[in-house]
Length: 115
Length: 111
Image (cartoon, rainbow over all chains, first blue to last red):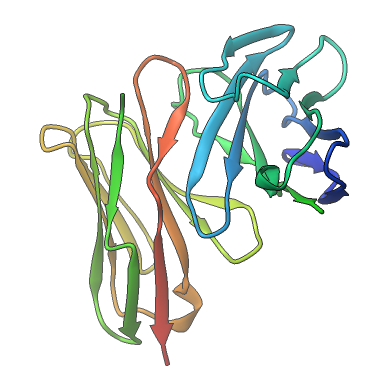
């Protein structure tokens, strides 16, 4: 079991470009969560998705950010027109159910740097 | 809104000493998680606590949960340098939803 796979591990974008972050959950996991971690801080919830559905996007900025988890393929977090303040580590987690009884497994993260 | 507070946020301690990290949360929940993060790395799951009075131990680390007090503790026994890391607690809101993280406790163990 390869665990939660995120790619790329590191991503550099110029201001105004688009960033696309990918997350493949563990085999058998259908619940995906995205978190953002600023330097020296904790993780902030962004969005919770199941296949083809956004369950909770209360942590997503209203503009420029979107997420999807299609029927086939990985979950994608998209950031349009990136700004310096978007520089952070973005972590994806997955779980087999939405109940948390089995915990959440985190991927290695994508470290986004906006220059 | 659920708030999760950890203290201390920074802790420097000598090898061989014991210490406790505290995690308080603001609303009813009986699911709490402890994670470890090394610099530049992902989060490693340490403990999943799912009921009042739950106690789990792994090596020099022991975690407990008191849902009535809305408090979890992570106790470190006879610390060793390898335990230097940032430790996060996270709480589930019992709504089959997301988990909310504390700010983390950066632990530095001096040889």
